[in-house]
Image (cartoon, rainbow, N blue to C red; front, side, top):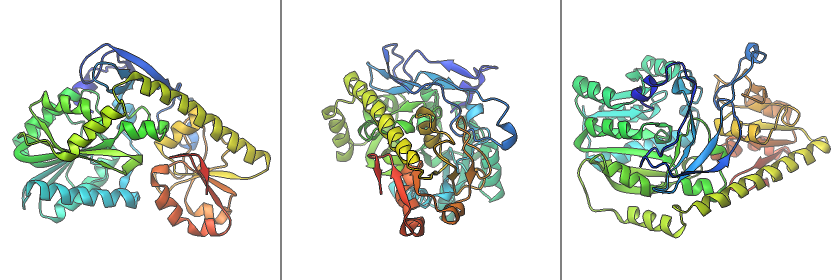
Length: 421
């Protein structure tokens, strides 16, 4: 997300992308079409249900030159992010990971009191609070007006903006360079990656570190995580093309590792100074070669697996409904909305969805118009089955709802495989 990109939009809501976001090649091949989709986090109020929704293409292309996968249509970031309803502080798994990242970042570059930590896509400021506890200066950057307002109210200075080279210059002038920059689950949202990394180059201290965590294309393919693909996620990275991109801006990936976040992610350490490539980084690059992540055939096979998952899930749900079993959803998530719309699962199948985020309660899912309630409704109502839509937090959800399971309730999981537990 960057301001130079936003300024190009004018009144357009969607733009076609014909070149690779990293290498500028035109050798793009479409390998997955999920159909027209509503904005994934566009949860509706009751009085908006009859006003009509806009649907946008959701097609993914593979670059045969560098291996990047990317959406072929980009929706205006103002439609996606100005009033954002995803809040990480409600998920214990994410909060724990944020704490781990803060510790790793501080140790990696020996950050001290009064050093500056900047979080790009800072949301409600949860990650920055850990740096603030170490008496570091903190600054958040997030385009969501509602979340920036919340973070500022809690004492976490947050700029309501998209990150860009221009903004990096302004921050450098006002706050000096940053010892630590973080971007968790953000890199996939960036349209102009070159402008983004030019900004990192400007803002990062010579002895600082930029830590980015993002969804890993291998896990998306291996676990058939097609619901991870939605309008906010413009790119789907392997490590190899990212190494080339970073290097072209005079930066270096000095470390990389896989994590379990969001169904499988990569966490990379990027620095101004070149260091010997770490064993973990080299191991991942060799892993990608073995699994042919730069081969189009790998992605064409994935498309067939996505179709199979849809067929199996729809058959399972309709079989349960024919037996008069009541089914609800858990987790009003963006990925859940992709699943529901792609599989055409509506209120005739799921009676309602429960979610822990107050902003979403009382609203309806985009496209399918399923009502969203508090989590407490699950134990009060006791439906027969719960389809976990936020499967990346499945362990946390199941542990939280042990009483429901003990009373005979069952959970349906779609990832890493379709199963009833």
